[in-house]
Length: 304
Image 1 (cartoon, rainbow, N blue to C red):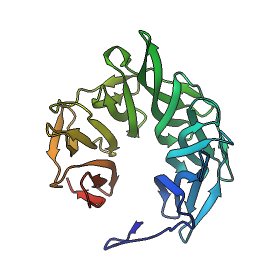
Image 2 (image 1 turned 90 degrees about the vertical axis):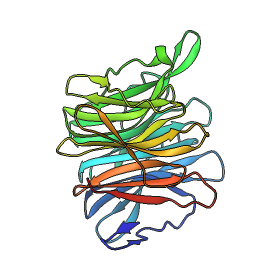
Image 3 (image 1 turned 30 degrees about the horizontal axis):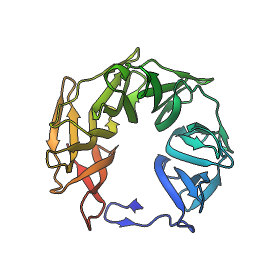
């Protein structure tokens, strides 16, 4: 859908109800990409991308990492018409789940090889800062003490290869996952998710990734941060959900002022969660869904 400053209208309506789009990125008003998967009646699905050229949307073929299995692109980010990255996961008809990275060079999508430092790796988010500076985050599992424990994974593209970047080891405390990444430059990136079902945020200062303590929200169970937005001035906003003692989930918003997190009470008087935040012209747009019967997806606008 598209917002023209006054109202929302449908911009792209797929011919197939089995087309599932997961992420969108606007490189320019006439260069917008959305990615996802083309579902089938069986297990198999195909990686799919759609492009907007300023006038209309068109489906652009993308390769499958697992030709007879499930292929899903869940995030997209780019810096130019010949530098678009999409990440996700693939599941072959016989075999374990693994990650998937694809690149658009201005003419075609190709699968790009990358390390698999953990088993069952799936990427959840990607942030392209330059042609030689791209970040992808996700999670996979490691065996610790005879048990499978989730561990966040962060990888970086230097213009030639993808390489794992060390991040805090969360396996001793029960593991964790990263769901989103954003940043204003190569020395100011934030990644968010959950650790042992508690809120998790990590910061990259140009040298290393470090955990930044997040608010403890009782009962501090089944909580997560789903999305982060970092402005050029360095302002950081995160959204997600927190669990209340009544076992309902409430939308969660917090702002990093450079020293600590400040929590905001979401204006939606309803149980639910916030799933995406984006910064546009000094405003922050947030989308989410309620967790109640008959509820509808909602959109908030923050004007700090």
